[in-house]
Image 1 (cartoon, rainbow, N blue to C red):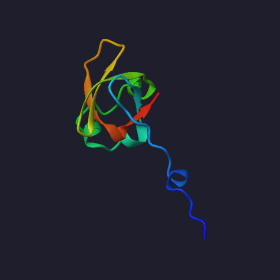
Image 2: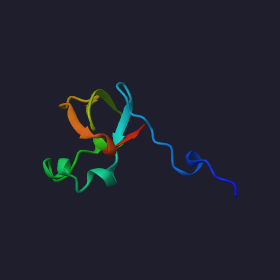
Image 3: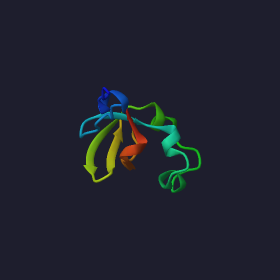
Image 4: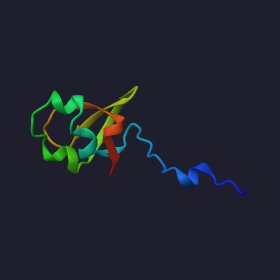
Length: 82
């Protein structure tokens, strides 16, 4: 019986590292603890991107947008590469 390689079955995860351009996944962000602690209506620039990853600490990334807004920390599983 032939075995199939696991990388052919599992989707490839995008590695987010310092300097990566990302946007926030709307489905992952809605209902999260971060969304509950923020304004009820999140700003559009979160989901449109690009935001730049400034720093990584465990499962979190510090993001900066090219707008005059504060930097934020969000979980890596809430981010998508642009």
